[in-house]
Length: 243
Image 1: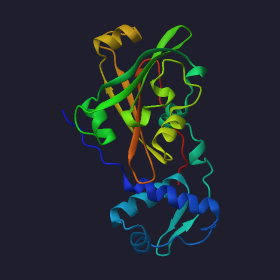
Image 2: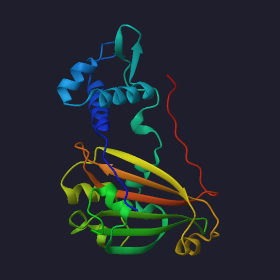
Image 3: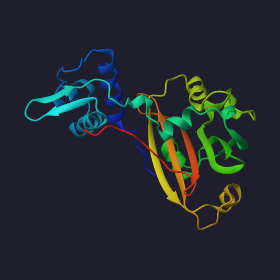
Image 4: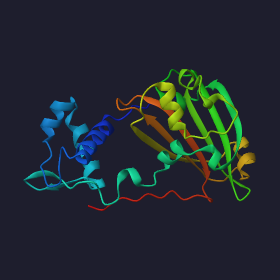
């Protein structure tokens, strides 16, 4: 089965408007540019702009006054960059700081889902780095990093030693760009035979699979970090303000 994946343009607008608010270009209490002004400046369709503004409102960056427009509130009470987000944690986690066993490192054929997330043709070669994470001598997670071969070449991502930096740093170095945002996908499924053995779970167990697709400011995906978690040993938690 093929999977379609289009990096969201609205994430670029969210990041840019948040940056302008933080830098004081749009100070607290000031009106935000109108939808039409943003559409013209960024060359985006109205639904894209409206979606981005909705996220900024939900996160607490801006507030909407009926009949008057949107106004800047400032940095949210719970800063977006400081929230505990699954994808961000996976991207920045250092292997030397966790108890892990490297299972695979090398070039493989990209699964359909991974190829779609990375914008590659089906069966394209990618570099896979996979580890088994343990806590209190119990297997708790299978962590996999997938990225284009040309990005991984010449970096520690193809070596068999534990990484002393998060994946993000190696990818940015190899790609020659900065990662700007993450798109998360969370699915639930039963384990494969291999996963049953690694995680010590039954074939009927429920697993959570978290895919964090890290993109640059243009929306181009550079790396996918996948975390496979036994459902009975993990709970995903997020925090955000109510507006």
